[in-house]
Length: 399
Image (cartoon, rainbow, N blue to C red; front, side, top):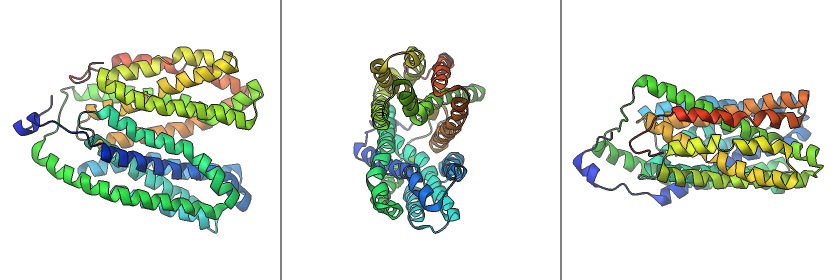
């Protein structure tokens, strides 16, 4: 039950859409800059004669710092809020871009990749906390809009790199630092707003509690982690190997396969929005259940249909599966009241880590058995969505 003062109970909680929009746009900028790193690998490989192992180490430097540090950042800022940490995180990413643009050695390239990872580690848990603070009671909607910014940034980054970094060379990576400066300006204002909100909240509202025993909370967090594993492993199979699957199975050109991939990315962005909007109406538990287990018929059919139906199924898979993550974040934050940053850090960090590990593992499977076999195996992953049946119900969650 939620414990508040009488005034807090009678006062409606407004949704601050301007703040949510600023956080979503900042998420877009953050994820554009992240994706510029991987999109710049061909340019860096040509200039520094990098091996694939060295490129992999750059990804590890980025994803390792991002995934490991996010829960730590969330835990620390839960206890010691630091609203301007968002601005500092974006500054770390900007420094990383400058190193990628001008570093004279591989060691400094690694440092640049790590700085981008640190910036991401600071940004995601704190920005998720701000989105929740600005949500009023529309937690799912706020989380979805926040994540939509990231999805759009991840999709736009490679396109921007293709039109800027590839034709103009490595030094043009520094041009993206202008986006970081814009993001830092916005986040500085958001930090001031959040500091005021925190002072007001501590005076009027006590932490809400759902009444579940500690053991039940721990088991539920583990269940949610399995569901994130299911979702992100399948999405990693699409984002990393889908173009190769299409080229091999349907003899598409690289450009045609990329268009099919963008079709998936667009549908995934739509799914993120729908997941939050629907979750606020019918409950996050219902969205988690439907979005993961409900995608199973489509994933089972995908490896065996023709090109037209592959495109259709890809859209359904993107919309349905991507609706899960905002609901999972909101559900987990309800489970552990007062630990918004820690939960966001854990689940965003887990998403980073699972994506990287799954991509590497599926690559080994693809080398051994063929890329089509990867999708035949991954097709069964959504069956783990049955675990959603064991998620508890909250008073506010009617799913």
